[in-house]
Length: 244
Image (cartoon, rainbow, N blue to C red; front, top):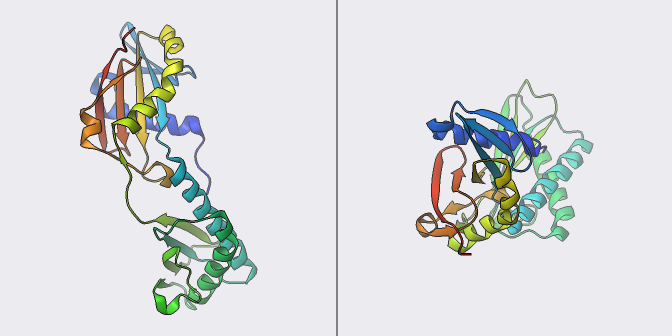
């Protein structure tokens, strides 16, 4: 499960910001590193630092889920099964590193049993206590499809469970992590913006911005701070220059 390189993802989110803000939609963009991008708007320059929200606890879960699917895919391949498209919905049960080998093997065997004999075809099974001897409780359901155009197996993990809420202290912490470098960034541009990204396609980044977090004021060195949730929603936070 390869992810796009960091700079490509950052440019992706910058373009979403530009789509939300007509004032910078036609601005020339210069790739930089300190900050990530510099926009030219008339005679002014705007530096934009992009950072993806990352919750370590969920990032770890995301990594373990991906490892289980990768291991199970390899084990399934060694069983000689046909190419399949597998959707694995993980439950809200927390995973441990020690769970990976056993769950991977159980998942591979489960997919091998579910793989349809006919192509096209599909099969699905969900966890319940009646099948707990071969269906681990860290999995909520497994769906297996065979399609004619598939020449190798594709396995995709998904997560269920609660969506964490970002409260004012969480947002303040995210901003503070970027603040030490802001002073040097300001020397490269007339204005400095921070774009915080919530990417719901990454388990480690799934979150919801609370109403109190939207209403709070954050002392920081950035002139403007935005929170972009996927591509759909852009919130601008209130900022204030810290007291000297």
